[in-house]
Image (cartoon, rainbow, N blue to C red):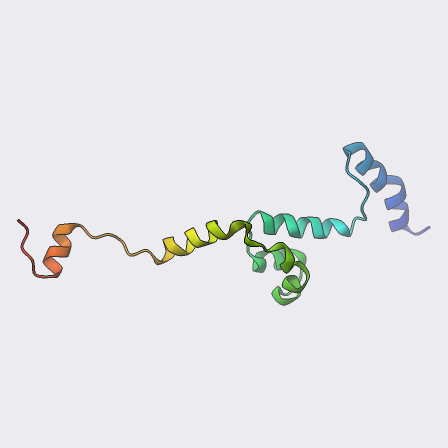
Length: 101
């Protein structure tokens, strides 16, 4: 039995059982971490760096987890970034040659 198999059999399985988590291989936890990051709204570029992937490789594997659940948040960010600051009416009047009454 190699050391990884021993770890999984004697430590990993018992730790998961005590925590009430169904068994999964330690490697599968990478997928859990990746999908948790995406569901928390982290960018694919950041997530890819965390896992040591290129963005292309990351998206090939995890794009299915990037769904429309955060579309409202994304649109709000875009609208905020593109918003034109409101000018006061006095400033607007001076810019367009109208006199303030």
